[in-house]
Length: 113
Image (cartoon, rainbow, N blue to C red):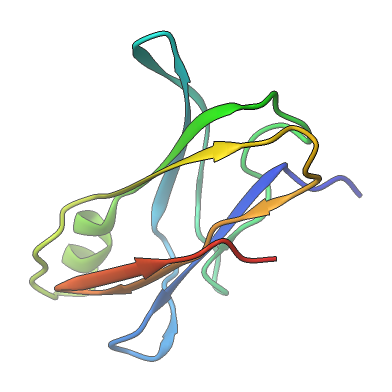
């Protein structure tokens, strides 16, 4: 089984559970423009395991999370309609896991394993 070079998961820290149904887009910076590469939606465990190719070249990438639609879907007012995480990828690294910890008025992230 192959795994995408980049994976993510979203945890709703207010509810204390995974955030299912969050749309996520993966983009690559090409010159001065962002190019869409892949998209997915978090599963019941809040994970997107198949987000783009198994290998990507070194470069700058962005994950965009549609947090506004997620919170609207659960009837919660939120301050951030979208969370955008930009990071650099080194092709020598086998895997990048970029989790998002989310609440209606704050978020945090880190490079996971």
